Image (tube, rainbow, N blue to C red; front, side, top):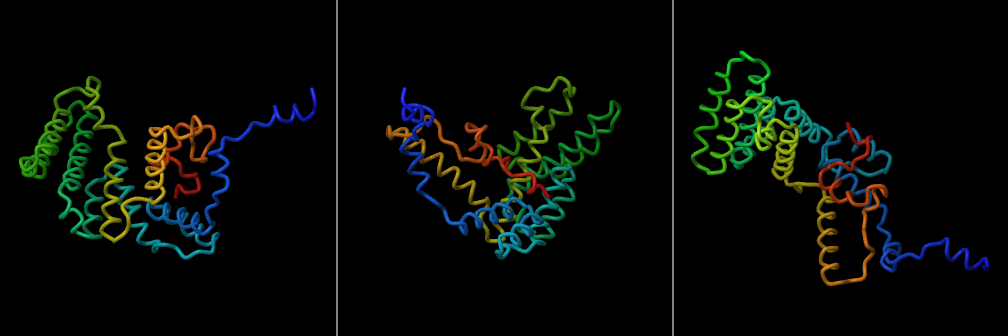
Amino acid sequence: MSSSTVVSAATPTKHPFDRRIDEVRPSKTDINKLIMDYLVSEGYPVSARRFATEANIKPAAAEQSIQERVDIRNAIHAGDIETAIHKINDLNPQILDLDPSLHFALLRLQLIELIRKCMSSVNADITPALTFAQSELAPRAPSNQEFLEDLERTMALLIFPPENLTPPLAALLDPSLRQAVATRVNEAILFSQGASREAKIKQLVRLRAWAEQKARAARKELPPTLNLGLDPSKDENDDDDVMNGNGEADIMRD
């Protein structure tokens, strides 16, 4: 066997699509803007400041503005919904006034936190949870069928023991619900400030997934799998990680 044959066998041939990708080189400026936009939108003020210094670019937003959203997000993640609502209203009272669905979601989450306290003790007093539901959520529920169903489902937490909750009820106590509401709040604040509701990279990921779907439906010549290049060991999950905000490096965790 000749040496040329050995080299050919050891070096895999790139798919034509991959060769075309290699020819596309986004500018460093565009990449830096995407990174900065992500750090600002997702709420990483310290990382945004450091990145601005290292990349020699101007920060896209004041650090204080980012930190206000971070404080609200942290309060929601900690289950301190009352504080979060106060901070949102201090920032801009119209955010919740103009978004009844988000306001109801926060109040329901506050009710869930009250119920969580009741469930932590056998002889806990459920009066605070009942009073809050009656005064804050019950008046809003009749105006929207979805609100009514959400309230009824939440109140069911007081009926069944924690260890026998059905999956839909158990999901109400999962930390992921806090995260989902916190994301909605972050998007609402950004929108109220005239910014995009989410990081541009998330929009690009969705556009990329849509384009791949259309190309495969049209039977275009593509590699069996396409990844974003974020982590070669997770080719199949790259899209989901960016969409869910799980793709950030540890340095971005302020």
